[in-house]
Length: 146
Image (cartoon, rainbow, N blue to C red; front, side, top):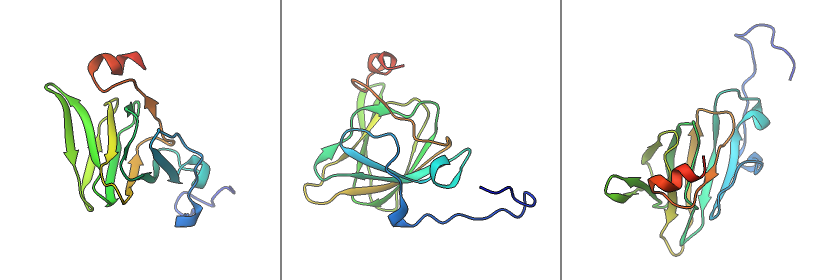
C-alpha cells in the first residue's frame, strides 16, 4: 500500500460480502471468514469477520488466547456454552444480541436449529483470529492446550 501524505488523509477500505477471506483459523462445525484483517485491509489491531454455524451442529471447545471477542448475532439463535463454578452454563441468544468473550475463556458455539444456520459477526482486538481447540471446557481442559 502506498504511504499516505499524512496520518489524516489515508484511504478507507470497503470489503463486500462477496470479498470475505476464508484464510483464517477454523474450528470444527463452523466456517469463519475474515472481513477486516491484516490480509484484507492491512489492519494492525483489530480482526472482524463472520462466522456461520450449520444447522444442528456445534463448534469444538476452544478459546481465543489473549484476544477479547465481541459477537453480534445476525441470524439464528446460537447458544454459547462456557464453564462456570457449577459446571457448564448456556447463554441462549437471538438476532440483535451481543456476547462478550473475555481472553482465554474456553467456550463453544452451538446451533440447535435443525433447519437454519446461525450467522454471527465477530470482532477481536487482535489482527488475526486466534483459535485454540480444547478437549473440553473444564479447568483441566483449558490448561491442557496452553
